[in-house]
Length: 415
Image 1 (tube, rainbow, N blue to C red):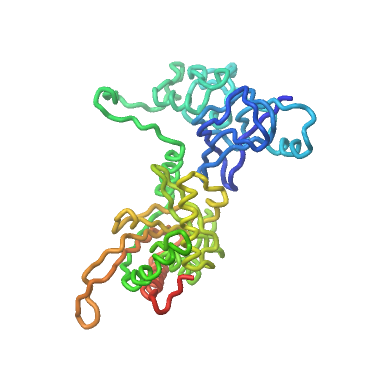
Image 2: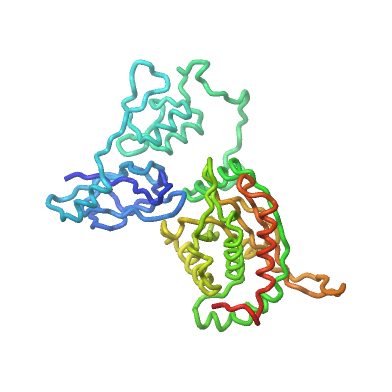
């Protein structure tokens, strides 16, 4: 019996996913729960599990193609008489493929015989393309997202478009040298990089950013961390990082200034009860933002454990949907790269992001005009001016500063 596997919904707000790499090919035998492909969404990288045991018949979505949740991605032949568990799972993830023919942008009397996915059809309409002029490289000549974008980039528009229908183009065309001619290196844009680009572009174009920076004396905090780090690493098996102390202070301040822990919902602002701290985790050229759930309820050691665990998952690309969901505020450890001042881009729909910069020794005036070498750090806040203003952000940063400057060996417990 022929069945169909579709793109799953890997998160509440996820509407589409990209097939990064197929792990199977037509003719392969698979068992229930075997991984069929690696997927990427704007939330997470995950595997596509098979809910059926059988033989892969056809791959319907090519690598690099982005399709809507619920769209058919491959077909599989299964034997009759499956278990009730398998049948139930099948109903949840498969359906008969239904693809509508797409109207040609230049034909008024008929529709094209080519069939495409809803996502691809939307792109064709958006760019006013004639589908009959686009060569399909997908299964059975199917037009894919890559084919459409290739047509857009190469300027393949129908010559039958009326003057009014034709999109504006440059009056002059400048021939540019190919990479082979001038030694440039062409780097393909990965789906993760495309997702990052889209989210960052959306953030800076839709959110009115404003910025504040505060300087904090963390001399006593440095002494506290140095006093515990070796024994902590030996006992726990992971590092006691400075970042854990900063995250702890921010989490406590968020409880005292809950407006900072809000998200934008268009016609309303939602002040979140749970303090779920998003932290930036880098892997090569990829950036993930996993979440420490209920961060305010954890000790410094507990936060350090979560940071180590999420960072390891990120490096191995094993972050789950749950790991990436529910963040209410973001703290970014830019100081780990030596940065001393930066302006972060807000992780929408959150209200703000805090950049923790490098700890630097500086000569500072203390007491009655005396100079001393102190460990200083900049905390740089980017805020959504639709939700927050300078008054509350100033009070919030002042409280974070107070908490950090009062972390010391005599009064602060790591556990």
